[in-house]
Image (cartoon, rainbow, N blue to C red; front, side):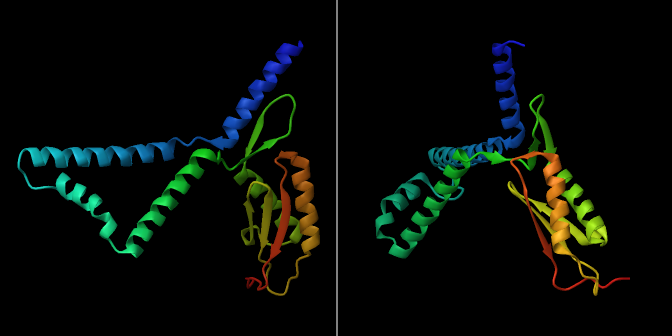
Length: 198
């Protein structure tokens, strides 16, 4: 295989990885566009109603202009609240626009192909392993996965201690065997109050 074809494959794999791990921001963009379109339609409807001498839906264009012009006479706390709300909305939209969306997936490290695994699959695998090693009911085991952390929550039966270090070691071995990227660090949380057994 030539160097150019290897570089082309690497670039292709990079695009596939990015596409599979990051979600698009189309939902947020569509939501903002719909809100802007609805505002424009409402303003256009108010203008048309004013031109044909019909009552306004909410406020006439003259009332809206007067309200904006007299904003400086409004109470300072009201203006500060409106400005703060506007700034927060702007910051949220900016963060959504800049930060990449993340899908609940991880890559399995491989040079020859792109292998993507869903976080729910990882959680299910870890929960089964933790239940077997901890000798507790699988229904009493829950796993939550974030970008770099896998947290195993165990609720053992009352009076049956669970060796946290053994479960942690088993979870670490399971994750190391998967060769995930980004790598997940395991954490085990054992409930203080046990579950009453049947």
